[in-house]
Length: 375
Ligand code: KG4
Ligand code: ZN
Image 1 (cartoon, protein in one colour):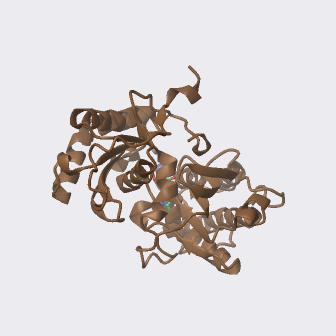
Image 2 (spheres, helix red, strand yellow):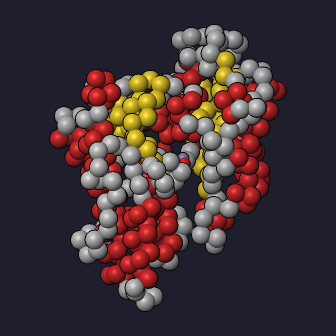
Image 3 (spheres, protein in one colour):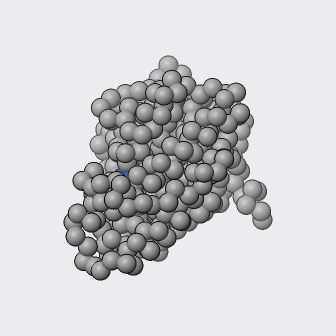
């Protein structure tokens, strides 16, 4: 069976069996389990997060220097029931109060995705509630409409209107997207090799800074000299909006092969600052080209948005805020706890899809790969 045929979303009208009172906000239970976070949240259509539990497996994977898919799947199995139970308890809700169930159905580590998806399917079938199959990337892409803040992260109460230009940077993906509406994503550029998050994680590993690399490299970069090492800026002398991070990673390896470990604290700080500056320059260069792309210009998005785990990065947020101001655009980023994987973004994407009638009828198979352009 071809991948396209596997997932069947019904685009027709809602059954309307659970949300009869249209004046009341829709209440959605969202479940995320596509990587190393088991998370659930209850979110309403008035943009309130009633409860949110994120059980991070990071400590379990740290000793291996990255996520081990089989261990992740087992950890999700052990955690999922408790995470959902606590999410309901914290919100003071019973499952009967919930209008719609949403869960990540891909892309991601399939063992983990299956755990969350089967839990959601079981709840939806046993309670006769509508079920939404959420694309994990759409969760990241839409969460700035639930809560967003400016670069300093002080005000998390903004909501972003369509259309917007999105830099989606996570551990698994790096894409520039024109977001026209729910389910309407136009790919403007993407990485040809590694994602930005992968580059952070790999460089951190080379320096012996542990997993995940992004947060620690970000912190160390703040204490270092960004001009100490001359990292390449791949593709920045070329037109277009695609990225390549493998060259930066190889340059890091080559620099480090000439050094003797253990590295000094100053060396690590300077190395992180120089590496991060190269990543920031690539992102700004590619976004500048995207802003001049005919499709983007014709759509005239008012807001420049960053989302995904890498959106936590202080230098990327600051540089993108500056780029937005130079182009008379607003800038928005999710609050820090909604950048990395979380159940609230899945619940919110569930609500946005449910409102359009995009619920699942009958069994579907979750997808390890599921591009946003195939919704
Ligand atoms: O979105 P996410 O939680 O998982 C995926 O869907 O992949 O993103 C995780 C990625 C990791 O690569 C992590 O190193 C990166 O986000 N990350 C950061 C920062 N915090 C997390 N990268 C750069 N700077 C940060 N502060
Ligand atoms: Zn993610």
